Image (spheres, rainbow, N blue to C red):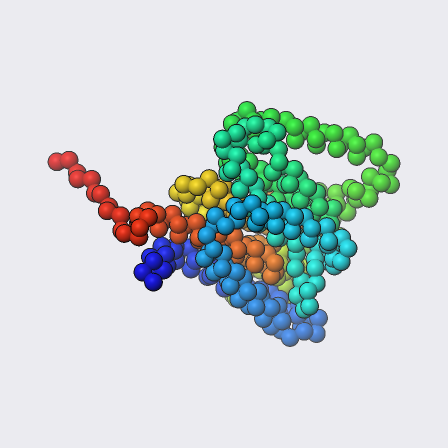
Length: 402
């Protein structure tokens, strides 16, 4: 019992509180952004709100479980094999029994609920790459034994997700994998060698693409996909087609001003702005709560990212550090891609805003990740305050020289 007390005292409750507040804020904004959509579909006005509340309850249970399980558990060889083959198996299975939503075969339907395996693949990649590179620290620059094995897994997962097609998720997973590689302890020479190989692969694939017959090439790189990339540069040129989402997002953000139109007073969500409760929820936040609402989200996300990175820096175990860096990079990249897409800084990719957008799979996986961070943070603090036998460490205070 005394040991349990010491463990509970070692958790970072401010970190946990910010996570909960951010999720609750997201639930409120989902209700505000989705009630008109629900009524338009002959559903109860609180349909998406109630489902997200359930998503949060399930996600918080997973957060607690992952916060209690020692992070070393995921480094076990049997657990790693289950993560690798389980994630690949599920991603392959989706091509047989998956459900197509928004032209992407990315979902499983389990009873009344839908699950997106690509979201869980994010966590699988972070755990596996962190575990393998942590184990290979003594020969991390050995290209065949140390560098390549996790990259093969990363590339295969990205490929399976990209051909669903869900290029946004595949791109984020790839960037997160790159962040883990950079922070793994490899020498700059090894990283530069990897960059050179990557550029060579991209050039080779481009040449192969242009060598294909025109009809096959158009299936792979259709005009619609190209338009999604080019639209952000001048959305008004494509106002009747691909540009209408971004244009209405501009209207919502611009009309919000500093203090916003008031909670629930968004006009763009009334049929003008598609996906107002998912991909473009930040536009509704900006319209209703103005700069203050947007800054609240950005600062809360920054706090979570900062605490995750600092937890990784304090961790003495390279596995713990790499997982923290991977999780922090995932949240940062996904937030940037969503905010950048909704504001026209980068092309739209259909990526949700962490902890705010509607979606059970995304919230569940993010909660699992923060549970792991909370566990690592607890171990950091526990080892700093207590000895191996549970006795409190004597804190030495340096006397100031007079």
